[in-house]
Amino acid sequence: MLPGDVRGSFQGQALTFRETVSSLTILMVLAVFVMYVILAILYESYLHPITVLSSLPVVLGSADS
Image 1 (cartoon, rainbow, N blue to C red):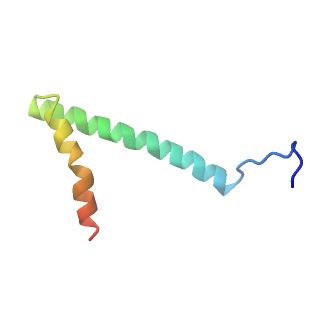
Image 2 (image 1 turned 135 degrees about the vertical axis):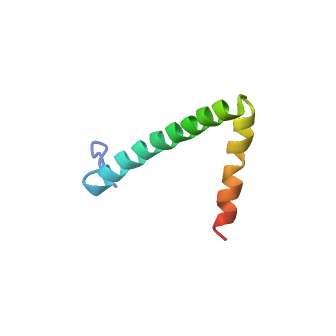
Image 3 (image 1 turned 60 degrees about the vertical axis):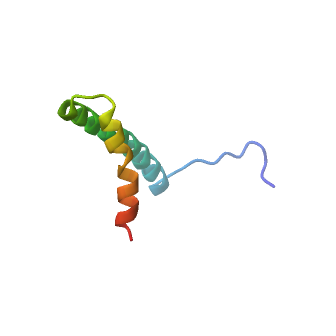
């Protein structure tokens, strides 16, 4: 067993990877928001872009096979 005062932390490549994943998550959310805004402008609707964007995971899942 380790003593109670021993602490662990990320260093080196693990720290860089954690920061990269955090940045990519923010980038993905921003990309979906931009796609929603563009579709809302094109379709002149707030609801229709949601239906289009909700079909993307199904399409991406079938593209793998």
